[in-house]
Image 1 (cartoon, rainbow, N blue to C red):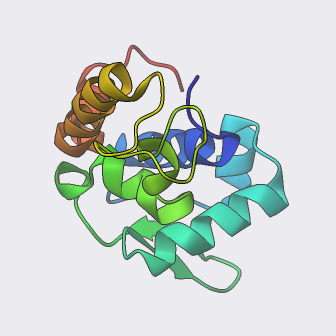
Image 2 (image 1 turned 30 degrees about the vertical axis):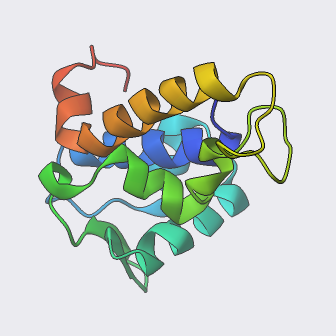
Length: 137
């Protein structure tokens, strides 16, 4: 995949939680169901919580719950909260300066591709993902 492991995990976690978005999910249930290392999952959940997608409820019966409806959480926002969307929108060859005035060999084709990618990520909500997912959980 083109995304980092952190982004992949964040999308998997939120998609899993969105299947029953009013439910309170324990950290253990997420770790066990998605086979994500506990420390890694907790770090991701901290970022998602800071972005106001979910809330963390402390205590023995605590866990994670959505603050925002999955209808209103888009992939571009998730990526931005855990990795920063700019990581995927920069120069494909890694140059610091790559603009219409100072282009790399891939600039024209990558610009078109990244615009399409960003548009897709900005229009795809968690609810859209659930509708198109065949029971992966």
